[in-house]
Image (tube, rainbow, N blue to C red; front, side, top):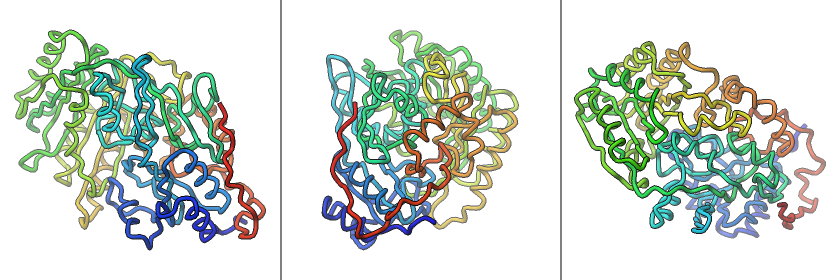
Amino acid sequence: MTSAPDLPRATDLLREALGDRLLTPADAGFPAAIRLWNGAPAGTPALVARVRDAGEVALAVRVAGRCGLPLSVRAGGHDWAGRALRAGGLVVDLTALRQVDLDPGTGVVTVGGGATAADVLAALRPYDRVVATGVVRAVGLAGLTLAGGYGPLCGRHGLALDNLLGAEVVLADGRRVTADAAHEPELYWALRGGGGNFGVVTALRYRTHPLPAALAGMLLFPLDQAAAVLRGHGAAVRDAPDELTVMAGFLPGPAGEPVAFLAPVFSGDDPAAGRAAVDRLRALGTPLVDQVAPLPYEDVLRMFDGGMADGNHYLLRTRWLPEVSEAVVAELVAAARAVTSPYSAIALHHFHGAATRVGIGETAFGLRDPHLLAEIIAVWAPGDDPAPHRAWAERTSAALAPHALPGGYPNLLAPEETDRVRLAYGPNWERLRRAKRRYDPRGTFSAVPTLPPAAPPAPRAGAADAGAPVDLREHPVET
């Protein structure tokens, strides 16, 4: 039988160390601290620890373990399923760990575990350097990286995780370790695709790339041209060079009807080749909006800043598609015509080039063949009946399933889709499970669904005994 959590003791221990940076539901700052991008109701934690450094992270992890509190980690707060908040648990809030330090000599940037893509790109902009990111500036770079990181530079530089050189991690027992090719290599392997299942990542080191500007922007087409545009997009991405990555899909239109979109990003050094690639896409229809120009990479990501407003309610579904076939085009257009909300969207993320040339066993990420990631985004305003919007997302996902690859992108899978999680990792699944048992045998980090929680361990003697001593001293750093 598992002992009940000792919340009073955990509160006392953390209050002594953190002072007013430990928040409870009685504190004025608590509602803001648990506000996430998705405004749909999520679990209400008992405590939020607003940590300032890795030592405080380690302290919070040890206290949670000793007092039997469920643990979760909040960084960017952009997970649609609200898994940064565990009901009755302790949230380790990393939002203060946002330092970004570039070594100009090596081109390696060290990033705090709470930094967003916007933080990192702003710091790198004076040097005309970038990191591989997703498509939204507000997303935490750590959470994006640990599961994958599809983005505009996927073809030229791979996923975000392909550019991760190392990380500082607090393990479930409070130890602080370095994970890279030379230190804890198995943990380094698992972090690149295995999600936030092995510890709290307090800092990350990335390879950066020179990129003063990219030819990028948005082409919007009326819904009656969508089928032709998607067919042409499918042909264009099949033979796209590494330097060209193209998102596609449907966005809310100004008149309430969805519009088809193409969002090309050309990061190559040949302007003529970039213009030719964009002209090919532009000619697929008669654009309602044609805004493509050389942009700093930071501004490329601003294209989607206003598309998904904080506070709305969200439900996401996802499929991996091997190609944009005629059947896929028909299902996507039908879904756009049947959309139930003026806020909902569908996005196709382009996986090709450099990302496909990483061996399947080099990282935990389980799919290296060229494909498109379909992101089905149901959005509705607070107070609306969620049922029709949820049903739309489920119908769209089910309609695409016969044309999809097994599994799906773990960062977007629903908590209950554990069968698809296993398929997502393919031949890496068993190795990933072994890494989980090695680094987190008690399932401390189970708020993220990438790996299904392990069976509950036997209770530790005195886990909630208020009289037992708690060793809060730092463990030595392992490198």
